[in-house]
Image (cartoon, rainbow, N blue to C red):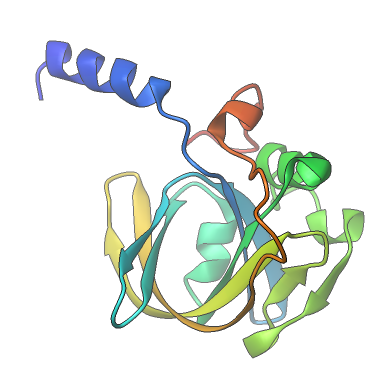
Length: 165
């Protein structure tokens, strides 16, 4: 891609207001979680969801040995939890000591303040550049009770991430 193409692309995507997700996992007794902006439904039948984890992220390293990921959405009343998982690194901070959670399907940490969540089995992993895609098949979850205003990129744009992307 040319410099002009990269510049145009960066200006375009900086205007988008993607939903933000907190993704958690557990492997070998280690719990991890991070804020994720690269995620999307990829199929209806069968249901599939794609989560991109940064190669530099503690959660990525734990997820390499995990079988499942939990994907959480939050309303604005719980922005503090989203900021915790987006601004701290699991290399230095046990984020789970700072929030309420319980063990969910496949032993994956479920954040109690999430407005909705699902756990997905990791079917495939593949390179997406500086991120690795994790293709999930949903196995369990908790839908939202009502239509809410979800946390999006515009709400967390100011955060200094625990790791560079």
